[in-house]
Amino acid sequence: MGCFASRPKDTGGNRRKPTSIGDVSVYVPGLRIPQPVEFSQSLGDQLPKTLVERLTALRTRIVVMANQEGPTITRTRRKTQHGGSTLADLHQALEDYLPVLLGLTKDGSHLQCKVQFNWVNQEDEQEETAISNVWYEILSVLHLMAMLQMSQANLLLLPRGSSDGYHPKISEENRRISIDIFLKAAGYLDCAVKHVLPQFSTELRRSLPVDLAEGALRALCLQALGQGVDIQLGMAIDSAKATLAVKRRLSCEMVKYWQQAQDNLMNLPLANGWGEKHSLFVKWKYVEAKAAAYYYHGLILDEGNTEKSHGMAVAALQAADECFKESKKASEAFNTSSPTSRTPPLFGTMKYLSEKIPKETSSKVRINRDLYSYEKIMETAPTLPDFALALKPDEYQLPSVDASWSEDSLQTKNTSNHIKGNQR
Image (tube, rainbow, N blue to C red; front, side, top):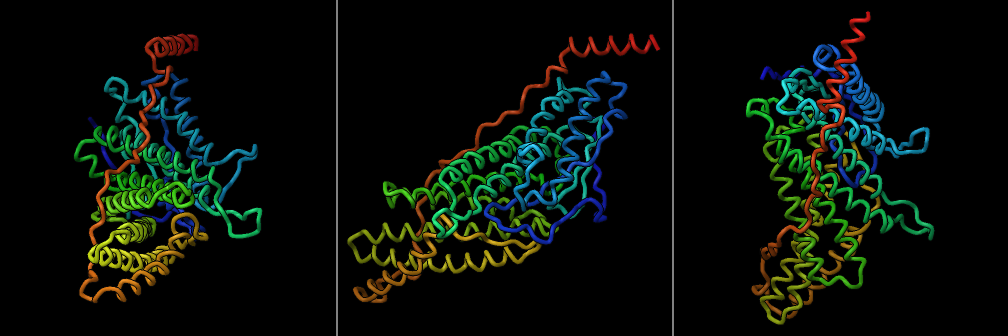
């Protein structure tokens, strides 16, 4: 098909990594930045001038916005001069571009490999990857749309000062909105894996940067779902109606999401700081989720009336306490890795568990060891229950090809161009 991949050496020219990314509730491994493309050189004699100009204008808008906001977008809640959100504006620009871009794939178009698209990577050791295939551009656009959603969720989940003057809080509205955002981000990534990656040959897949590798996309999707469940668990903790069984189920599901995310990242050559930090974040959240799951599993086991169930409860609570201590070390390792970050004041699940796990573990261990002999206390943690994963990505479908690609529209524009050419 005449497609080829180019992997320029890392020259440090376009990739800009900040030294610090501030408070992090939701980790975003940098934003891949598009580099300028000359559509007129590749498509000028293939398409009507107006369509080439439209593609150029839509993509140039994205290039300008992404290059301006990319280095800071993970840190600040910046506004446009009209009071809008830069995150929302860039996301809208990508949505406007995608239907027009998809015209290059129409009916197995011979135009698929005419344009070389170049993006700056964040997790790959190579600074940039340029590939002459429109599906690479579509994949990059979906990835950036997902990362913008994750960035928005991070801003929503940073505790703000409360009106009562006490601890910073996150409103219930922000928590609910963030769950919807996580599902939307997961939907973009799920679409990328299921409907865009299959368009690549095996050889071309090997040319993709690690940022867009299937494992990285799946891990980010699972991260979004895992963080969504984390918010659900925090809301359940705040609800008087939520039972221990509900909280245990949510926390056990959270463990599975993070474990699967970790598994998907395990064999990827993540690099350049962002990638290494990504692995540390997933490890931290996985251990944190296990602390919650063992805690609620232990409380339910302790409701049993047998020595065995009480012994298993103590073992589960001890495992929760060990995981909680390990999670604090994992958090520190994540925050001190480059680019450095900070953990915002605890809220939701971990705020509650940071107070409950040490207290409950100490109390239950003391009581049960007074009642039973040491041999009756399990030394290994009981197996966590295996629940089906309930939270699913939003079902996102690629938009229809823009009307400017219709046969009538193309013929009209070609006729107009021909007339103007004859007049000249």
